[in-house]
Image (cartoon, rainbow, N blue to C red):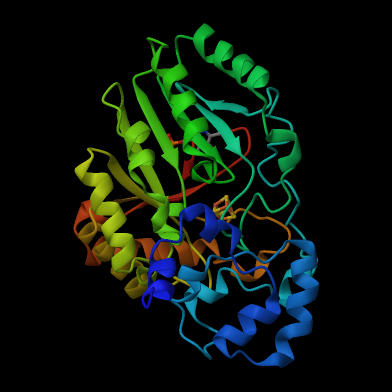
Length: 335
Ligand SMILES: *Cc1c(COP(=O)(O)O)cnc(C)c1O
Ligand code: SF4
């Protein structure tokens, strides 16, 4: 009884943590002791795309530092409200390439299943900030349509759980989907793209490992970290469990001004990822989504940074610098 508070805190489930995410600028400002003069702008910008950040991620931020690289990724600011030419609401034209609810088939041999539209965290630079989530929450019947599509196309070898964040979905749903897909003979690989192992590592439970590490597939989890400081010991532990279960771990990063736009920051991220058993996969140039222009790193600078990484790291620690161009058959290398 004496230890009740401690015990309650320690046993908070990931579902509870997800319910208890920080959703108001007031609370974030008060927790981190930020300058209240910036609060009105935060309010305005969060009306456009809501603030949403798990508490354990906020605990990795430095109080009082408005330029903290983790904070910058989630803090709504006035710059988001500026209309900048060339930045649109659907830069990847996904609204037009999304014919089946919950299924995106853009690239040869692999399909995306949009398992859920929701995320644990709202990243201010996200290209999905204007995505029509509501249209992409398939019912079981719609799942059957998506599964039929995969069954019928033997050129598909890999199914990718995507979102939103697929790990926001309950394990029961994910386990059921994995079961259904495992009965399709031509599928040999299952991949999950998720930011949750980084922003809410308690999500990696035994139930999650059960379907994610099923031996039927060669399983890959692509995490999303943008800065070395995101990978604290709790994240390292979750990643080590995933590795022990036989899951191949990769990381994708978005190149973001004021967050990770230096050779030293990107090199530290690669080193830290590898120490956690994760290989750097992609370094994405920002998608030109309305509200995110202040994160843009000009392409010439991006190439320069990538060169700097090639000069300072082992080859396997250097992610591929890519851009997504609508209509192209793959991510496009920036060289
Ligand atoms: C990025 C992406 C993939 C995966 O591409 P890889 O290069 O294999 O990582 C698949 N489908 C869509 C629609 C994508 O945007
Ligand atoms: S977790 Fe991924 S999909 Fe969700 S808001 Fe962040 S970048 Fe976008």
